[in-house]
Image (cartoon, rainbow, N blue to C red; front, side, top):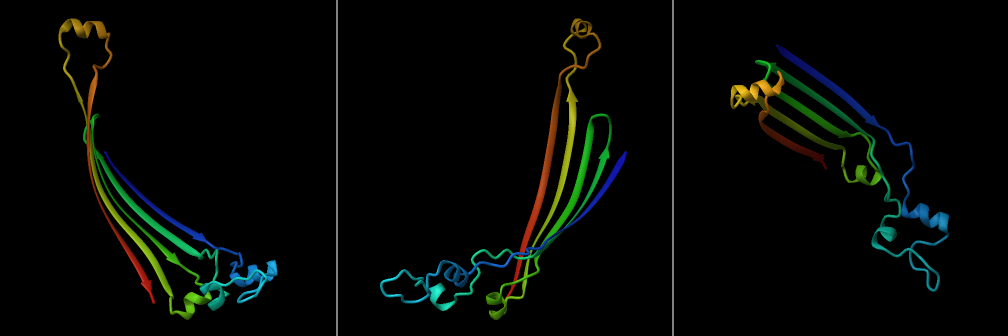
Length: 159
């Protein structure tokens, strides 16, 4: 008997929050950016040079995954399966700092393939007396399974 299975999944994440920046914290806390003399102030390279750099930016993204699996059962105790899968994660939104730097494309992709085989090898009864005492139950079984996988990961960043 053959079995064929295909699965498609599309997951989209959209962040509806406004990113927090050093400028936001400065405004909410009343602590100025730059030199403040005897009062507390933010004086870091990032704060002084780029007060609008997001501290908690979570990009909008889309994950698309596909998988295909084919299985063949050869007998009551042997099975062979093979499959392919691919997944791609794409960044859909970027901060103003990323856009100013020319960052406009972000992708991560993973491709995988596998082959799995399994079988149950039954031991022969030791004697007729052993068979009589088991009252028709199956003898203890030894399971044998082997698998092979291959994966590839690709990262694309366009600057």
